[in-house]
Every structure is written in structure tokens, then in C-alpha cells.
Image (cartoon, rainbow, N blue to C red; front, side):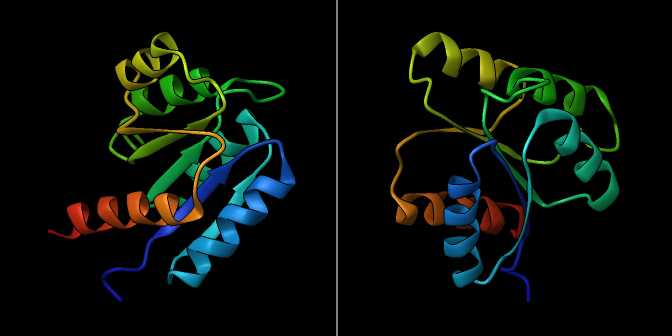
Length: 127
């Protein structure tokens, strides 16, 4: 199925990763989760997702660090990253985008908006 994506949702709030997983699976995607930065790095290297949904405030390695590590590795440098964060400041957004994120979604977000943004990335990669 060309519109199906393997997505890694990274957040230390299980309720939020459950919510993302629920809506994205309903939209036809496969979703795995990680609860901290180093778990996310390991999951990306082990499973190579099509898209990463990445929180910034993580308990060990923050989302900025995860983004930077993934962008420096040729094996993971091109995986689209969408930052999903409660930080809504222009500085946080700009830094995330400078580090290689393709999009920035502010919490709280609409599940519909999350699915639409993911679907847009999936279609862009397929086309």
C-alpha cells in the first residue's frame, strides 16, 4: 500500500503516544513508539521508520539532540521529522527546523491535523 507509512512516535507521555498511534493506525499507518531520546535513536536505527514524530522535552536526550544525531548519520539523515511539542516559541520552532525537522506541530493539537500532516508527508515522499 503506497500511502501506508511506518511511523515512530516519540514522547514521554504514554497517553499522547497512544492517542497518536490510535489515530494514525486508523488512517492506515503502522506506528511504533519510544518514550525517550536514546530509545528513539535505537528504534530509528533498528526499524528505519518513514516518518518520526518527535517531542522536544524528553527525559534523557531532548528532541533537539535526537534530531541532530539523526541528521548527522547518513543512514537516517533523510527520514522526515515532525516535531510535536508544547514549546510554541518561535525560537524553539526555528531551532527545530534548522536542525532538520520538516514540520512543527504545537501541543495540544487536533488528531485530524496530525493525520493530515503525516498524510501530506507520505504523499510527498511517494510522488
